[in-house]
Length: 560
Image (cartoon, rainbow, N blue to C red; front, side, top):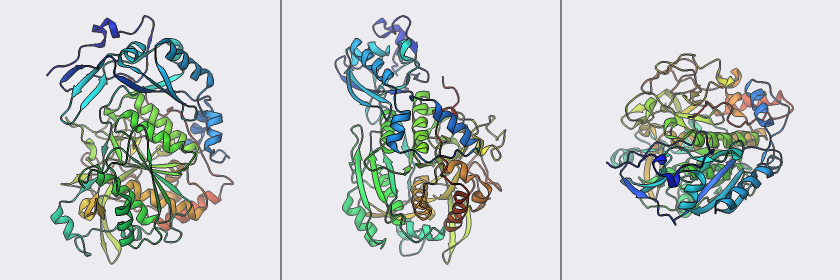
Protein backbone atom coordinates (compact mmCIF):
# COMPACT_ATOMS: atom_id res chain seq x y z
CA UNK A 1 0.00 0.00 0.00
CA UNK A 2 1.45 3.33 -1.03
CA UNK A 3 1.53 6.12 1.50
CA UNK A 4 2.28 9.76 0.97
CA UNK A 5 5.64 11.01 2.13
CA UNK A 6 6.14 13.50 4.90
CA UNK A 7 5.07 17.04 3.99
CA UNK A 8 8.59 18.22 4.83
CA UNK A 9 10.05 15.98 2.10
CA UNK A 10 8.70 18.37 -0.55
CA UNK A 11 10.25 21.85 -0.24
CA UNK A 12 7.54 23.22 -2.54
CA UNK A 13 4.93 22.69 0.18
CA UNK A 14 7.05 23.17 3.30
CA UNK A 15 6.03 25.98 5.64
CA UNK A 16 7.88 29.23 5.21
CA UNK A 17 10.54 30.07 7.74
CA UNK A 18 9.04 31.27 11.00
CA UNK A 19 5.50 30.08 10.30
CA UNK A 20 3.65 28.46 13.19
CA UNK A 21 1.78 25.19 13.51
CA UNK A 22 -1.93 25.64 14.01
CA UNK A 23 -2.78 23.78 17.24
CA UNK A 24 -5.01 20.74 16.72
CA UNK A 25 -4.54 20.66 12.94
CA UNK A 26 -2.25 17.62 12.74
CA UNK A 27 -3.41 14.76 10.52
CA UNK A 28 -1.70 11.38 10.18
CA UNK A 29 -1.43 9.90 6.68
CA UNK A 30 -4.57 8.03 5.70
CA UNK A 31 -4.31 4.23 5.77
CA UNK A 32 -5.46 4.09 2.15
CA UNK A 33 -3.71 3.81 -1.22
CA UNK A 34 -2.34 7.20 -2.23
CA UNK A 35 -3.46 8.14 -5.74
CA UNK A 36 -1.12 11.12 -6.02
CA UNK A 37 -1.01 14.86 -5.43
CA UNK A 38 -4.06 17.08 -5.87
CA UNK A 39 -4.00 18.67 -9.37
CA UNK A 40 -2.26 22.03 -8.93
CA UNK A 41 -5.05 24.11 -10.50
CA UNK A 42 -7.95 22.41 -8.72
CA UNK A 43 -10.07 24.94 -6.88
CA UNK A 44 -10.22 24.42 -3.12
CA UNK A 45 -12.56 26.07 -0.65
CA UNK A 46 -11.60 26.44 3.03
CA UNK A 47 -13.07 28.17 6.05
CA UNK A 48 -10.84 30.06 8.46
CA UNK A 49 -12.47 30.04 11.90
CA UNK A 50 -11.66 33.06 14.06
CA UNK A 51 -11.72 33.70 17.81
CA UNK A 52 -14.55 35.55 19.50
CA UNK A 53 -14.26 39.31 19.86
CA UNK A 54 -14.53 38.97 23.66
CA UNK A 55 -13.53 36.38 26.25
CA UNK A 56 -16.32 37.34 28.65
CA UNK A 57 -18.46 34.46 27.44
CA UNK A 58 -15.86 32.06 28.81
CA UNK A 59 -16.14 33.57 32.27
CA UNK A 60 -19.91 33.40 32.03
CA UNK A 61 -19.67 29.67 31.24
CA UNK A 62 -17.37 28.97 34.17
CA UNK A 63 -19.81 30.66 36.58
CA UNK A 64 -22.74 28.79 35.07
CA UNK A 65 -21.19 25.34 35.33
CA UNK A 66 -20.12 26.15 38.89
CA UNK A 67 -23.87 26.59 39.61
CA UNK A 68 -23.56 30.38 39.96
CA UNK A 69 -26.62 31.19 37.89
CA UNK A 70 -26.05 34.55 36.11
CA UNK A 71 -29.11 36.77 36.12
CA UNK A 72 -29.38 37.19 32.37
CA UNK A 73 -31.60 36.18 29.50
CA UNK A 74 -30.46 34.25 26.43
CA UNK A 75 -28.96 36.54 23.84
CA UNK A 76 -30.61 37.19 20.51
CA UNK A 77 -28.58 36.25 17.47
CA UNK A 78 -28.17 39.93 16.67
CA UNK A 79 -26.86 40.67 20.18
CA UNK A 80 -24.50 37.72 19.98
CA UNK A 81 -23.06 38.88 16.66
CA UNK A 82 -22.36 42.35 18.08
CA UNK A 83 -20.80 41.14 21.33
CA UNK A 84 -19.06 37.91 20.36
CA UNK A 85 -18.69 37.80 16.59
CA UNK A 86 -15.31 37.98 14.89
CA UNK A 87 -13.09 41.00 15.47
CA UNK A 88 -12.93 43.33 12.47
CA UNK A 89 -9.15 43.51 12.90
CA UNK A 90 -8.90 39.71 12.64
CA UNK A 91 -11.02 39.70 9.48
CA UNK A 92 -8.73 42.37 8.03
CA UNK A 93 -5.69 40.21 8.80
CA UNK A 94 -7.21 37.27 6.89
CA UNK A 95 -8.07 39.50 3.95
CA UNK A 96 -4.46 40.70 3.83
CA UNK A 97 -3.20 37.11 4.13
CA UNK A 98 -5.44 36.07 1.22
CA UNK A 99 -4.24 38.89 -1.05
CA UNK A 100 -0.60 38.13 -0.26
CA UNK A 101 -1.06 34.45 -1.14
CA UNK A 102 -3.21 34.70 -4.24
CA UNK A 103 -6.39 33.56 -2.53
CA UNK A 104 -9.89 34.98 -2.92
CA UNK A 105 -12.20 35.92 -0.03
CA UNK A 106 -15.50 34.30 -1.00
CA UNK A 107 -17.57 35.19 2.06
CA UNK A 108 -17.28 36.70 5.52
CA UNK A 109 -19.67 35.72 8.33
CA UNK A 110 -18.89 37.91 11.32
CA UNK A 111 -21.55 36.25 13.48
CA UNK A 112 -20.22 32.75 12.70
CA UNK A 113 -16.58 33.94 12.91
CA UNK A 114 -15.83 32.50 9.46
CA UNK A 115 -13.86 33.84 6.53
CA UNK A 116 -14.26 31.59 3.48
CA UNK A 117 -11.30 31.44 1.10
CA UNK A 118 -10.95 29.91 -2.36
CA UNK A 119 -7.88 29.30 -4.47
CA UNK A 120 -5.93 26.73 -6.42
CA UNK A 121 -4.42 23.71 -4.74
CA UNK A 122 -0.95 25.14 -5.38
CA UNK A 123 -1.84 28.48 -3.80
CA UNK A 124 -3.54 26.87 -0.80
CA UNK A 125 -0.64 24.48 -0.25
CA UNK A 126 1.86 27.31 -0.30
CA UNK A 127 -0.26 29.63 1.85
CA UNK A 128 -0.86 27.09 4.63
CA UNK A 129 2.32 25.02 4.32
CA UNK A 130 0.52 21.76 3.61
CA UNK A 131 0.96 18.93 1.15
CA UNK A 132 -2.38 17.84 -0.32
CA UNK A 133 -2.87 14.28 -1.56
CA UNK A 134 -5.63 12.13 -3.01
CA UNK A 135 -6.43 8.70 -1.58
CA UNK A 136 -8.64 5.90 -2.86
CA UNK A 137 -11.23 4.53 -0.46
CA UNK A 138 -13.68 1.74 -1.38
CA UNK A 139 -16.38 4.32 -2.11
CA UNK A 140 -14.66 7.53 -3.20
CA UNK A 141 -11.51 9.51 -3.77
CA UNK A 142 -10.59 11.44 -0.62
CA UNK A 143 -8.47 14.56 -0.34
CA UNK A 144 -6.40 15.11 2.77
CA UNK A 145 -3.32 16.81 4.11
CA UNK A 146 -0.64 15.19 6.25
CA UNK A 147 0.99 16.78 9.25
CA UNK A 148 0.24 20.32 10.41
CA UNK A 149 -1.48 23.33 8.91
CA UNK A 150 0.77 26.40 9.22
CA UNK A 151 -0.07 30.08 9.52
CA UNK A 152 2.02 33.23 9.96
CA UNK A 153 2.74 33.97 13.66
CA UNK A 154 0.66 37.16 13.58
CA UNK A 155 -2.42 35.09 12.65
CA UNK A 156 -1.94 32.43 15.31
CA UNK A 157 -3.84 34.23 18.13
CA UNK A 158 -6.76 34.95 15.80
CA UNK A 159 -7.24 31.62 14.02
CA UNK A 160 -8.80 28.66 15.85
CA UNK A 161 -9.24 26.29 12.89
CA UNK A 162 -8.83 25.96 9.12
CA UNK A 163 -11.26 23.43 7.65
CA UNK A 164 -11.76 22.26 4.08
CA UNK A 165 -8.56 20.48 3.15
CA UNK A 166 -9.86 17.10 4.35
CA UNK A 167 -12.82 15.44 2.60
CA UNK A 168 -12.90 12.09 4.43
CA UNK A 169 -16.33 11.17 5.91
CA UNK A 170 -16.42 12.77 9.35
CA UNK A 171 -19.39 11.07 11.00
CA UNK A 172 -21.69 8.09 10.73
CA UNK A 173 -25.43 7.89 11.20
CA UNK A 174 -26.42 6.22 14.47
CA UNK A 175 -29.49 4.30 13.32
CA UNK A 176 -30.18 0.56 13.15
CA UNK A 177 -33.00 -1.10 11.17
CA UNK A 178 -34.58 -4.47 11.83
CA UNK A 179 -34.44 -7.01 8.99
CA UNK A 180 -37.64 -7.03 6.97
CA UNK A 181 -39.06 -10.28 8.37
CA UNK A 182 -38.76 -9.13 11.97
CA UNK A 183 -39.88 -5.63 11.14
CA UNK A 184 -43.12 -6.79 9.55
CA UNK A 185 -43.83 -8.86 12.66
CA UNK A 186 -43.81 -5.60 14.61
CA UNK A 187 -46.78 -4.10 12.76
CA UNK A 188 -50.34 -4.58 13.85
CA UNK A 189 -49.52 -4.21 17.56
CA UNK A 190 -47.32 -7.29 17.87
CA UNK A 191 -43.62 -7.82 18.29
CA UNK A 192 -43.04 -5.15 20.93
CA UNK A 193 -42.35 -2.26 18.52
CA UNK A 194 -43.95 1.17 18.71
CA UNK A 195 -44.95 4.22 16.75
CA UNK A 196 -43.15 7.37 17.91
CA UNK A 197 -46.34 8.75 19.44
CA UNK A 198 -46.82 5.52 21.41
CA UNK A 199 -43.33 5.92 22.85
CA UNK A 200 -44.25 9.48 23.79
CA UNK A 201 -47.30 8.26 25.70
CA UNK A 202 -45.32 5.46 27.38
CA UNK A 203 -42.80 8.04 28.60
CA UNK A 204 -45.57 10.33 29.83
CA UNK A 205 -44.90 13.23 27.47
CA UNK A 206 -47.18 16.28 27.83
CA UNK A 207 -50.08 15.88 25.42
CA UNK A 208 -51.31 19.45 24.95
CA UNK A 209 -49.95 22.07 22.57
CA UNK A 210 -47.81 20.04 20.21
CA UNK A 211 -44.77 22.31 20.64
CA UNK A 212 -46.34 25.27 18.88
CA UNK A 213 -43.93 28.18 18.63
CA UNK A 214 -40.85 25.94 18.86
CA UNK A 215 -38.40 25.36 16.00
CA UNK A 216 -36.34 22.16 15.87
CA UNK A 217 -33.22 22.03 13.71
CA UNK A 218 -32.22 18.58 12.41
CA UNK A 219 -28.71 18.17 10.99
CA UNK A 220 -28.13 15.65 8.20
CA UNK A 221 -25.00 14.66 6.26
CA UNK A 222 -26.33 12.42 3.54
CA UNK A 223 -29.57 10.98 2.17
CA UNK A 224 -32.82 12.85 2.08
CA UNK A 225 -36.61 12.70 2.04
CA UNK A 226 -39.61 13.37 -0.16
CA UNK A 227 -41.90 15.75 1.68
CA UNK A 228 -45.07 14.13 0.31
CA UNK A 229 -44.07 10.75 1.76
CA UNK A 230 -43.21 12.27 5.15
CA UNK A 231 -46.57 14.03 5.29
CA UNK A 232 -48.39 10.85 4.20
CA UNK A 233 -46.77 8.98 7.09
CA UNK A 234 -47.67 11.68 9.59
CA UNK A 235 -51.24 11.75 8.27
CA UNK A 236 -51.49 7.97 8.67
CA UNK A 237 -50.36 8.35 12.28
CA UNK A 238 -53.13 10.90 12.89
CA UNK A 239 -50.77 13.47 14.36
CA UNK A 240 -53.26 16.28 13.75
CA UNK A 241 -52.31 19.42 11.81
CA UNK A 242 -49.28 18.66 9.70
CA UNK A 243 -46.09 20.45 10.76
CA UNK A 244 -44.03 22.80 8.64
CA UNK A 245 -40.88 21.08 7.35
CA UNK A 246 -38.20 23.20 5.65
CA UNK A 247 -34.94 22.13 4.04
CA UNK A 248 -31.76 24.22 4.03
CA UNK A 249 -28.69 23.40 1.92
CA UNK A 250 -25.32 24.24 3.49
CA UNK A 251 -21.92 24.12 1.83
CA UNK A 252 -23.09 22.19 -1.21
CA UNK A 253 -25.15 19.67 0.75
CA UNK A 254 -28.61 18.80 -0.53
CA UNK A 255 -31.77 16.88 0.24
CA UNK A 256 -30.91 13.96 -2.03
CA UNK A 257 -32.89 10.80 -1.24
CA UNK A 258 -31.31 7.65 -2.65
CA UNK A 259 -34.46 5.55 -2.70
CA UNK A 260 -32.67 2.93 -0.59
CA UNK A 261 -34.24 2.82 2.90
CA UNK A 262 -31.09 1.25 4.33
CA UNK A 263 -29.00 4.23 3.24
CA UNK A 264 -28.75 7.60 4.97
CA UNK A 265 -32.39 8.07 3.94
CA UNK A 266 -33.23 5.90 6.94
CA UNK A 267 -31.49 8.36 9.23
CA UNK A 268 -33.06 11.47 7.76
CA UNK A 269 -36.60 10.13 7.78
CA UNK A 270 -36.26 8.55 11.23
CA UNK A 271 -35.21 11.90 12.67
CA UNK A 272 -38.05 13.84 11.09
CA UNK A 273 -40.81 11.30 11.70
CA UNK A 274 -39.93 10.63 15.35
CA UNK A 275 -39.82 14.32 16.24
CA UNK A 276 -42.77 15.42 14.09
CA UNK A 277 -45.04 12.61 15.35
CA UNK A 278 -44.72 14.05 18.87
CA UNK A 279 -44.08 17.80 18.51
CA UNK A 280 -46.84 17.98 15.94
CA UNK A 281 -47.14 21.77 15.84
CA UNK A 282 -43.46 22.66 15.94
CA UNK A 283 -41.55 23.88 12.90
CA UNK A 284 -38.76 21.64 11.57
CA UNK A 285 -35.74 22.89 9.67
CA UNK A 286 -33.53 20.18 8.14
CA UNK A 287 -29.97 21.34 7.36
CA UNK A 288 -28.14 19.24 4.74
CA UNK A 289 -24.35 19.48 4.47
CA UNK A 290 -21.52 17.29 3.13
CA UNK A 291 -20.26 14.60 5.50
CA UNK A 292 -16.85 16.17 6.18
CA UNK A 293 -15.45 18.03 9.17
CA UNK A 294 -15.95 21.21 7.17
CA UNK A 295 -19.56 20.35 6.32
CA UNK A 296 -20.36 19.26 9.87
CA UNK A 297 -19.21 22.54 11.35
CA UNK A 298 -20.91 24.56 8.60
CA UNK A 299 -24.29 22.90 9.25
CA UNK A 300 -24.03 23.41 13.00
CA UNK A 301 -23.01 27.05 12.65
CA UNK A 302 -25.84 27.69 10.19
CA UNK A 303 -28.41 26.21 12.59
CA UNK A 304 -27.06 28.02 15.65
CA UNK A 305 -26.77 31.42 13.95
CA UNK A 306 -29.75 31.16 11.56
CA UNK A 307 -31.53 34.53 11.75
CA UNK A 308 -34.29 33.45 9.36
CA UNK A 309 -35.66 30.27 10.97
CA UNK A 310 -34.20 30.80 14.49
CA UNK A 311 -34.26 27.22 15.85
CA UNK A 312 -34.19 26.88 19.63
CA UNK A 313 -33.64 23.09 19.75
CA UNK A 314 -31.16 21.03 17.71
CA UNK A 315 -31.18 17.27 17.10
CA UNK A 316 -28.02 15.55 15.80
CA UNK A 317 -27.90 11.83 15.10
CA UNK A 318 -24.46 11.74 13.44
CA UNK A 319 -21.12 11.43 15.19
CA UNK A 320 -17.86 9.51 15.47
CA UNK A 321 -15.36 8.45 18.10
CA UNK A 322 -13.42 11.32 19.66
CA UNK A 323 -10.19 9.77 18.40
CA UNK A 324 -11.24 10.20 14.76
CA UNK A 325 -11.59 13.99 14.96
CA UNK A 326 -8.68 16.41 14.75
CA UNK A 327 -8.23 18.71 17.71
CA UNK A 328 -9.27 21.78 15.72
CA UNK A 329 -12.48 20.01 14.65
CA UNK A 330 -13.40 19.32 18.26
CA UNK A 331 -12.56 22.86 19.32
CA UNK A 332 -14.55 24.52 16.52
CA UNK A 333 -17.64 22.32 16.97
CA UNK A 334 -17.54 22.68 20.77
CA UNK A 335 -17.26 26.46 20.49
CA UNK A 336 -20.33 26.51 18.24
CA UNK A 337 -22.32 24.36 20.67
CA UNK A 338 -21.33 26.84 23.36
CA UNK A 339 -22.63 29.67 21.17
CA UNK A 340 -25.91 27.79 21.06
CA UNK A 341 -26.17 27.65 24.84
CA UNK A 342 -25.68 31.42 25.01
CA UNK A 343 -28.50 31.82 22.49
CA UNK A 344 -30.88 29.64 24.52
CA UNK A 345 -30.53 26.61 22.23
CA UNK A 346 -30.49 23.05 23.58
CA UNK A 347 -28.71 20.45 21.44
CA UNK A 348 -29.46 16.72 21.76
CA UNK A 349 -26.84 14.38 20.27
CA UNK A 350 -26.90 10.59 19.79
CA UNK A 351 -24.27 8.83 21.93
CA UNK A 352 -23.59 6.05 19.41
CA UNK A 353 -24.74 2.53 18.62
CA UNK A 354 -21.54 0.53 19.10
CA UNK A 355 -21.29 0.24 22.87
CA UNK A 356 -18.30 1.23 24.95
CA UNK A 357 -15.86 0.74 22.04
CA UNK A 358 -17.79 3.16 19.78
CA UNK A 359 -16.80 0.92 16.90
CA UNK A 360 -13.08 1.73 17.12
CA UNK A 361 -10.97 -1.14 15.84
CA UNK A 362 -8.47 -2.63 18.23
CA UNK A 363 -10.72 -2.50 21.26
CA UNK A 364 -10.48 -0.13 24.17
CA UNK A 365 -13.08 2.31 25.39
CA UNK A 366 -14.16 5.35 23.41
CA UNK A 367 -16.98 7.87 23.46
CA UNK A 368 -18.70 9.55 20.54
CA UNK A 369 -18.25 13.20 19.64
CA UNK A 370 -20.00 15.65 19.64
CA UNK A 371 -22.09 13.82 22.27
CA UNK A 372 -19.05 14.06 24.57
CA UNK A 373 -19.01 17.86 24.41
CA UNK A 374 -20.27 19.31 27.75
CA UNK A 375 -22.37 21.84 25.81
CA UNK A 376 -24.45 19.03 24.25
CA UNK A 377 -26.96 16.65 25.83
CA UNK A 378 -25.72 13.11 25.13
CA UNK A 379 -28.52 10.60 24.46
CA UNK A 380 -27.95 6.89 25.21
CA UNK A 381 -30.12 3.88 24.44
CA UNK A 382 -32.37 1.46 26.31
CA UNK A 383 -34.71 -1.42 25.56
CA UNK A 384 -38.29 -0.94 26.76
CA UNK A 385 -40.84 -3.62 27.60
CA UNK A 386 -44.42 -2.58 28.25
CA UNK A 387 -47.78 -3.95 29.28
CA UNK A 388 -51.04 -2.07 28.75
CA UNK A 389 -49.09 1.06 27.85
CA UNK A 390 -46.88 1.07 30.95
CA UNK A 391 -43.21 0.21 31.24
CA UNK A 392 -42.63 -3.12 32.96
CA UNK A 393 -38.89 -3.35 32.36
CA UNK A 394 -36.21 -1.09 30.92
CA UNK A 395 -32.62 -2.16 30.41
CA UNK A 396 -29.53 -0.84 28.65
CA UNK A 397 -29.69 -1.59 24.93
CA UNK A 398 -27.11 -4.26 24.05
CA UNK A 399 -27.84 -7.07 21.58
CA UNK A 400 -26.97 -8.32 18.10
CA UNK A 401 -28.13 -5.04 16.56
CA UNK A 402 -25.85 -2.78 18.61
CA UNK A 403 -25.47 -1.22 22.03
CA UNK A 404 -25.78 2.16 23.70
CA UNK A 405 -22.71 4.36 23.42
CA UNK A 406 -21.24 5.69 26.62
CA UNK A 407 -18.14 6.05 28.71
CA UNK A 408 -15.68 8.70 29.80
CA UNK A 409 -14.29 11.41 27.52
CA UNK A 410 -10.57 11.66 26.84
CA UNK A 411 -10.95 15.19 25.44
CA UNK A 412 -13.07 16.95 28.06
CA UNK A 413 -12.60 16.92 31.84
CA UNK A 414 -15.60 16.42 34.12
CA UNK A 415 -17.79 19.53 33.93
CA UNK A 416 -18.88 20.92 37.31
CA UNK A 417 -22.47 19.81 36.80
CA UNK A 418 -21.25 16.18 36.71
CA UNK A 419 -18.65 16.42 39.45
CA UNK A 420 -20.78 14.58 41.99
CA UNK A 421 -21.73 11.67 39.75
CA UNK A 422 -18.80 10.73 37.52
CA UNK A 423 -16.30 8.57 39.44
CA UNK A 424 -12.73 9.85 39.62
CA UNK A 425 -11.52 6.53 38.27
CA UNK A 426 -14.08 4.99 35.93
CA UNK A 427 -12.93 1.46 35.10
CA UNK A 428 -11.76 0.54 32.55
CA UNK A 429 -10.93 4.17 31.74
CA UNK A 430 -8.06 5.40 33.89
CA UNK A 431 -8.85 9.08 33.63
CA UNK A 432 -11.38 11.52 35.00
CA UNK A 433 -13.49 12.91 32.15
CA UNK A 434 -16.88 14.09 31.01
CA UNK A 435 -19.37 11.25 31.42
CA UNK A 436 -21.50 10.07 28.48
CA UNK A 437 -24.49 9.82 28.16
CA UNK A 438 -26.55 12.31 30.16
CA UNK A 439 -29.94 10.71 29.50
CA UNK A 440 -31.37 7.73 27.63
CA UNK A 441 -34.45 6.41 25.86
CA UNK A 442 -35.74 3.54 23.79
CA UNK A 443 -33.18 2.66 21.08
CA UNK A 444 -33.23 -1.12 20.59
CA UNK A 445 -34.47 -2.10 17.11
CA UNK A 446 -36.31 -5.04 18.75
CA UNK A 447 -38.46 -2.44 20.53
CA UNK A 448 -37.97 0.13 17.80
CA UNK A 449 -39.99 2.75 15.99
CA UNK A 450 -42.45 1.89 13.23
CA UNK A 451 -41.82 4.50 10.58
CA UNK A 452 -41.85 4.87 6.79
CA UNK A 453 -38.62 5.22 4.81
CA UNK A 454 -38.80 5.97 1.10
CA UNK A 455 -42.43 4.87 1.21
CA UNK A 456 -41.68 1.52 2.85
CA UNK A 457 -42.75 0.57 6.35
CA UNK A 458 -39.80 -0.32 8.57
CA UNK A 459 -38.77 -0.65 12.20
CA UNK A 460 -35.80 1.60 12.88
CA UNK A 461 -34.09 2.63 16.11
CA UNK A 462 -30.64 3.35 17.55
CA UNK A 463 -29.59 6.34 19.61
CA UNK A 464 -30.44 8.24 16.42
CA UNK A 465 -34.05 7.90 17.48
CA UNK A 466 -33.36 9.13 21.02
CA UNK A 467 -31.98 12.55 20.04
CA UNK A 468 -35.11 13.59 18.05
CA UNK A 469 -37.31 11.98 20.73
CA UNK A 470 -35.86 14.31 23.36
CA UNK A 471 -35.91 17.24 20.95
CA UNK A 472 -39.67 16.72 20.60
CA UNK A 473 -40.14 16.32 24.37
CA UNK A 474 -38.40 19.59 25.09
CA UNK A 475 -40.34 21.39 22.38
CA UNK A 476 -43.43 20.42 24.39
CA UNK A 477 -41.75 21.36 27.68
CA UNK A 478 -40.61 24.77 26.45
CA UNK A 479 -44.03 25.55 25.05
CA UNK A 480 -45.60 24.79 28.43
CA UNK A 481 -42.97 26.78 30.32
CA UNK A 482 -43.08 29.68 27.91
CA UNK A 483 -39.28 29.87 28.07
CA UNK A 484 -36.14 28.10 26.99
CA UNK A 485 -34.66 25.43 29.28
CA UNK A 486 -31.10 26.27 28.21
CA UNK A 487 -28.67 25.60 29.75
CA UNK A 488 -30.30 22.23 30.31
CA UNK A 489 -26.91 20.56 30.92
CA UNK A 490 -26.68 21.84 34.49
CA UNK A 491 -30.43 21.63 35.23
CA UNK A 492 -30.57 17.90 34.45
CA UNK A 493 -28.33 17.16 37.41
CA UNK A 494 -30.32 19.25 39.89
CA UNK A 495 -31.61 16.63 42.34
CA UNK A 496 -35.28 17.53 41.88
CA UNK A 497 -34.93 17.24 38.10
CA UNK A 498 -32.71 14.16 38.03
CA UNK A 499 -35.11 12.33 40.35
CA UNK A 500 -37.87 12.55 37.73
CA UNK A 501 -35.94 10.24 35.41
CA UNK A 502 -36.53 6.49 35.50
CA UNK A 503 -33.28 5.01 36.78
CA UNK A 504 -32.09 2.17 34.52
CA UNK A 505 -30.20 -0.32 36.68
CA UNK A 506 -29.94 -3.40 34.44
CA UNK A 507 -27.69 -4.20 31.51
CA UNK A 508 -24.40 -2.95 30.13
CA UNK A 509 -22.86 -1.53 26.96
CA UNK A 510 -19.75 -3.69 27.08
CA UNK A 511 -17.27 -2.14 29.49
CA UNK A 512 -19.80 -0.24 31.62
CA UNK A 513 -22.74 -1.62 33.59
CA UNK A 514 -25.93 0.10 34.66
CA UNK A 515 -25.96 1.05 38.33
CA UNK A 516 -28.24 3.06 40.63
CA UNK A 517 -27.82 6.73 39.77
CA UNK A 518 -25.81 7.97 36.80
CA UNK A 519 -23.90 5.39 34.78
CA UNK A 520 -21.87 5.37 31.57
CA UNK A 521 -24.48 3.59 29.48
CA UNK A 522 -27.86 5.07 30.46
CA UNK A 523 -26.92 8.36 32.13
CA UNK A 524 -29.46 9.45 34.73
CA UNK A 525 -32.14 7.35 33.02
CA UNK A 526 -35.18 7.67 30.78
CA UNK A 527 -37.84 10.38 30.98
CA UNK A 528 -41.15 10.75 32.75
CA UNK A 529 -42.23 13.73 30.68
CA UNK A 530 -44.99 15.30 32.79
CA UNK A 531 -43.07 14.87 36.04
CA UNK A 532 -39.99 16.38 34.39
CA UNK A 533 -42.06 19.32 33.18
CA UNK A 534 -43.33 20.01 36.70
CA UNK A 535 -39.82 19.83 38.15
CA UNK A 536 -38.46 22.25 35.55
CA UNK A 537 -41.40 24.57 36.16
CA UNK A 538 -40.50 24.71 39.86
CA UNK A 539 -36.81 25.14 39.09
CA UNK A 540 -37.31 28.02 36.65
CA UNK A 541 -39.95 29.72 38.79
CA UNK A 542 -37.33 30.12 41.53
CA UNK A 543 -35.34 32.49 39.32
CA UNK A 544 -36.37 35.78 37.78
CA UNK A 545 -34.54 34.94 34.57
CA UNK A 546 -33.47 32.01 32.47
CA UNK A 547 -29.88 30.96 33.14
CA UNK A 548 -27.64 31.05 30.09
CA UNK A 549 -23.97 30.46 29.40
CA UNK A 550 -21.41 29.63 26.76
CA UNK A 551 -17.70 29.38 26.28
CA UNK A 552 -14.91 28.85 23.84
CA UNK A 553 -13.63 25.41 24.55
CA UNK A 554 -12.25 26.06 28.03
CA UNK A 555 -13.56 22.66 29.06
CA UNK A 556 -11.52 20.94 26.37
CA UNK A 557 -8.25 19.20 27.03
CA UNK A 558 -5.19 20.23 25.05
CA UNK A 559 -5.07 18.67 21.60
CA UNK A 560 -1.86 17.65 19.86
